[in-house]
Length: 151
Image (cartoon, rainbow, N blue to C red; front, side, top):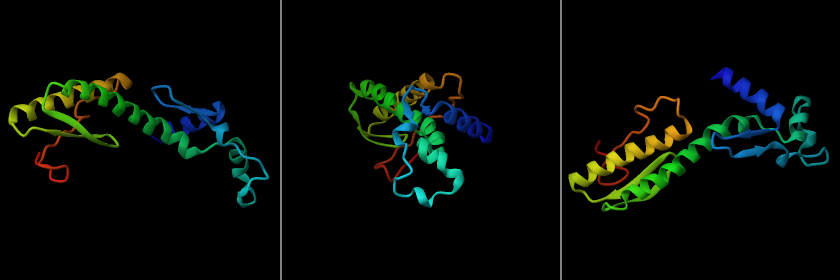
């Protein structure tokens, strides 16, 4: 992880941008500032170049991870939504990398929804990270409500 962070920082400083696996780019110059901006006088000497270039190390490290996760869940939403159309079930919420599904309580529907979730969410994961491990990447729990999971 430390090596990836160091390499990511070096690459994003050099290139002036950062991107997700899906290709969404962020150009640091969009946040570049000038010496007459408020806050400039508060900077340490080593922070000046980043201030002027708009570079933010935390963003350089977070954007590819969180942005790619958002892309994956977005694709999973489409796959799951389409697959649930023929069942008495629907997506009612997303929370970061989770989908909340409301479905009929009969065992056959619950099993079908669980299979769909596992297959479609794993498919979305593999579209972005084809060489990454995928077993266990989808964890499904059920319950009478989101806060009372049974499995």
